[in-house]
Length: 339
View 1 (cartoon, helix red, strand yellow):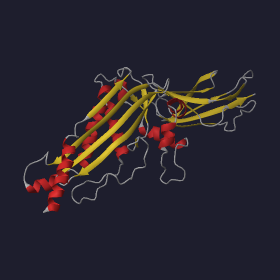
View 2 (cartoon, one colour):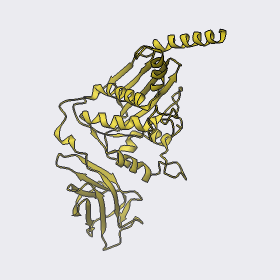
View 3 (cartoon, rainbow, N blue to C red):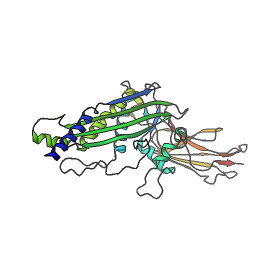
View 4 (cartoon, one colour):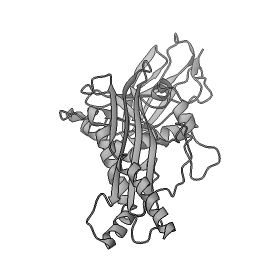
């Protein structure tokens, strides 16, 4: 009897804290006009601990062992919330770089953890990279969006289960490092004595049902929607229904850096089809046309004039769509020279 009373007393104390701690909290800071489209790159989301430090998350965090209660998901909380954010951003007047392009850019430029199979992105290195470097050397964008999961908890109190989701989002300009938008969000949902029908059997089952992934993922969806409300614009420009031009790969025929006397420089680009394509050598030889030989496959060449002289100039390529959106990307490697 004493033990039972003690347990009930503890549960009561726990519930007292739970019932007063389930109100949503949302704080927003907006310092740009979201009606004017800018191109943003959503970086891979990360999970942080109570001190705000990046933490390595168990890949099975979303998978419960409660038989017949919880559905199984293959994503981590960070991956799931990032997918929800990407979806919600489709309602904003923002030009969002395709997620696969963002991931490929980091993988192909050394932002991975060495000797991991499958390849694992180095989140610490990505978060430490300056936005300007990301938007000029890796991608073509105006700003980068950082996302961190600060809470992803499911607590079981016997007669009550509580799910809590917290996240922060920060949009940073690549031009001046200014924070354009920032939000901190946290909300909870409960199952059990405070939500659900009465009766002993329901009092037992409802808290267990609250451990289902469907509860916390639905909560995460609501949190993301509320977190991004300041960016939601109904008058979304029509051209934003399509993704911006994407450059998958680019190369030229002077990997050693030197163009031979009397020779030429050929450039190949793989990317979005039916675009206006060009390449430049430094800032003096610019916008040389590329011809689309087959869908998304562009080729072109530069034949130096006898008077042309330059050294260690970066070769860059660009694709432009009908709406005037342009994606530029430097070709990796050393600059080229012609003496």
